[in-house]
Amino acid sequence: MNTPLEKQVDVIVVGAGFAGLYALHKLRAMGRTTQVIEAAGDVGGVWWWNRYPGARCDVESLQYSYSFDTALEQEWQWTERYAAQPEILAYIQHVADRHDLRRDVRFNTRVESARFDPARERWVVRTDAGAVFSGAHLIMASGSLSVPRLPDIPGIQDFKGKVFHTGSWPHEGVDLTGLRVGVVGTGSSGIQAIPQIARQAAQLTVFQRTANFSIPAWNAPLTPQQQQEFKAAYREHRARAREVGTLYEFSAKGALDVDARQREAEYQRRWDKGGVNFVHSFNDLMVNKASNDTISDFVRARIRGIVKDPAVAEDLCPYDHPLGTKRICVDTGYYETYNRPNVKLVNLRKTPIERFTSNAVRTSDAEYEIDVLVCATGYDALTGAVLGIDIQGRGGLTLREKWAHGPRTLLGLMTAGFPNLYIVTGAGSPSVLVNMVVGIEHHIDWITDCLTWLEQWGRTTIEPTVQAQDRWVDHVNAAANATLLPMANSWFLGANIPGKPRVFMPYAAKIGIYRTECQAVADKGYEGFITGGPRAAATKAATTAAAKEVSQ
Image (cartoon, rainbow, N blue to C red):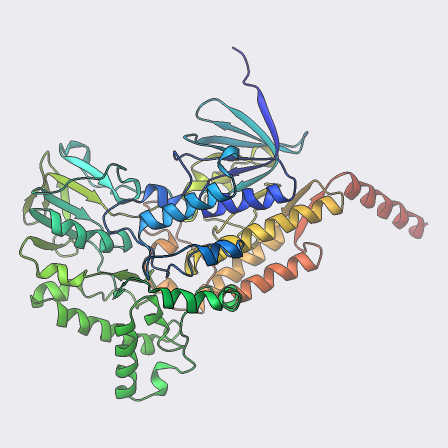
């Protein structure tokens, strides 16, 4: 059997979404040969896969875009305040066309393994098609939310109807007209999909395990004047976003610093404005439980005012977590959907699912016949895509073994024992807590600056020390514990994946603080990292010789 011919490049990038494409663009400009490997049939990442009804970004479209191409940001015309999936995908595809990026992307190809060869100081990557690539550096731009999770419910394999996951929706679409549809999951994708499905289905049964807080988007077309005004100050907006993540209206007051009437008025003003900006009504909502109770009570009152059936309204009211400790959802008509005669809510906390049958979902007190099951059950977030590949570092240590008790990184970018392996918007970075495009651009800039530094100083490898990595993990935990975030049993903690270690994964401090910390590490010659290479070895030898002379 012939060994596949190895294609050698400077850098291998896994993923062709926002992160992978920006990495390719930057690396090309540096003169680095690059191979991008992408499982999908085209560019787009999460926006190529997520085509479920109602799929839309919860960051305003004028902000959810690249900043590196200043001409493009002026030329591209967004149609809505919150862009839908087709428009975001069209934008990413336009960027790929504009910069001729596809010629360095291998599509419809999954990476199965990546092994570091210490003798050559190269990563050897093998794909499901049998191709072999090697590169001095490996960048995992595989996405924080890219591995769909199906529900682990007895008998689901016996169900004879069609089963769809929101994260891998058929590209040709699904006609649900006249069908009995069951939806499992009421997180962000479920909250977006349910109103759209209800308009098609003859009967929609929503199986809710956990009620979630959702804020109205009040989405609307963007006028030319709105776009012109925002674009006129794009440089200022981009600079501000790098400090705060997303351009929200932040308050300088605590919720309990004002009286009840003023507090209610501010919540109502923000509710009427819509969007995630609502959670920034006061500056202590994520650190003071008493303050958070006031905003949580406000939203529960809004739910009761929208949903006509008091029992259904109460089932939709979250009580098990403070508002904002799970990723806040943004919706269009979500709560109103439960006023429709063809929609039924099943509270699984009261009547849990026992099993699936060939044509129904059986709970502890009833059986619900369905033709189609839609799983809006989320993703193996932040670590799923990376751990889905057999990655081996020094000494044959696998990343799965190293992260068996939770991910351990330095700056969320690298992990000890795995030289020249870079992770974009992974665990230990702000990641999903900020505008992802802002976080992506920062990570790729840091990585490419690091490659330039290595070349300038004659170094060939870089990896964190165990001590620096452990300090960072402790710091990430401390940042989370200073907030209310760990109070929720959320996917931030991996709680949606059976058996996954319960570790708070994102870095909860502001991205401006994080950027400062990353820059300080670089300014100090990549403090906390070990570097190797011919010049590094020579320097070490000279230092050792000098030390011996002094001792003699």
